Image (tube, rainbow, N blue to C red):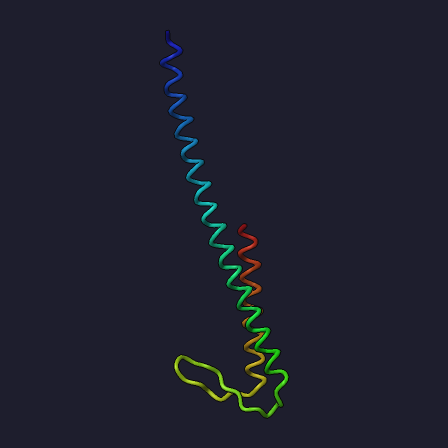
Length: 103
């Protein structure tokens, strides 16, 4: 008769461990989903910067180019715009690598 009383605490411990595991699984799934969304957005940023850089590459070197800053535009040399786009791509690629390491 002692074994039914002993089984109840073990069952409770198993239920608690299973509930904890379910919580961890849900948390991990949410984390993976968020990371996937961030990677998708970063890939769009890379593609946009690459396409923009390709378009400005076709322009003559002396073309007037403006950088959007808030609600205004600042005249910038083509090389500065090009370097900013390359930097934006590099930063996005580094963030993607960081996110992929987490997963």
